[in-house]
Image (tube, rainbow, N blue to C red):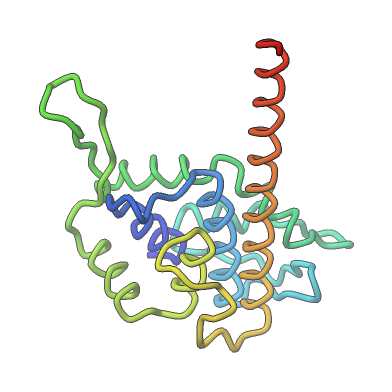
Length: 201
């Protein structure tokens, strides 16, 4: 399993205080993939740039796809640009992959047969591993989770991020999530102003 899959499973917690937006989660998943590529030696971080090493052969299909999308020409891609490019609809990609692997199941949220469905993790070794990492507050998983509002706290409060490249990636994910939230707020204000214009005085 990868950090991204562990993060997705943790984000599927049905408790309301753990609700995570798909856009926020997609950015964090892209960051998690990059951190795993750093850990495997497939990339290094130079300032805010992603410097690829030898083409890796990850066991995980989605991590392999991420590695294949790395920019291998100078000037190398900025971390922020990678997060937005790779992160587009990435949470839906992970949901489909985990459902296909039998790690997620759809359950109806109401008693009626036509009620809406929700996705929940299946009790598998994969889910238990993710839960163990979460319970142990594994630094990278805890930092990424806090960026998207799971577990409280701020990502820079998380202990154990002693790898400079990992710290840089977590900070970039945080900035991207904040930028996305600013876009949402601006759209909300613009839509409210437009509605008021049509209502008139």
